Length: 108
Image (cartoon, rainbow, N blue to C red; front, top):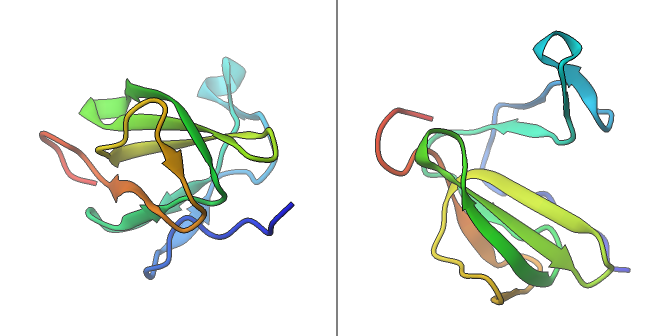
């Protein structure tokens, strides 16, 4: 397996929240299974590893979530981005997945 890369190459503020899988959110009513990167609106988001897009869906405040089945069988979801990717597209490690931020209104 290749080494995974950071999805944000530009400067970003921090990684926030618990760094454990399924950390508690909403007073314990739901689990959060990810890491949140604090970055400016328009920051490019890169593929952590190579794989095939299995889902593109509307996400929080009219952004998109892109799920990629990686070549190693793991699944990654990139959220709160604007993207042109379609289901079935193959991405190479380091390809641009999208840009961080709202797609219609609001601010990142």
